[in-house]
Image (cartoon, helix red, strand yellow):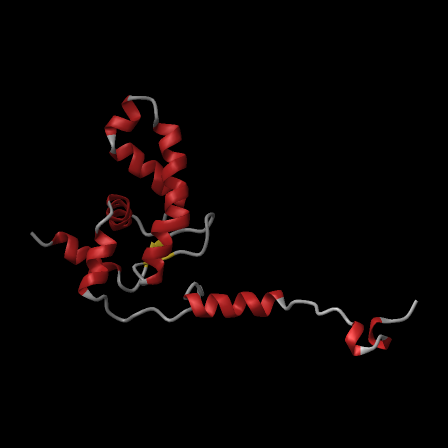
Length: 140
């Protein structure tokens, strides 16, 4: 059996560079966890971030605690909505909200440095723009 390097170049298989391809896709699509965060939030970004009740609930919970996991956040959100607890859909609602937090809301808030979020099991903490966004919510 010949070593791979001994084969003529025309017969060699090209091995895709998955890591390189993923790095390019991350860089092009802006999903890099270490990307630099904007220093200030634009008005349209503030409106978008504050437009969803789940994101507003995340901000409310983080006003009262320094860190919380996505599961704890979901529990707090379900508990604050008494209708979900009374009708018995609390457990299913917690699962649904946890998935939405992990795959949507926390990523959006992290992308604008409103929260620091590093994964489903990691604690969520206020980010550099947290106070700016909360102050907008406090306006009459």
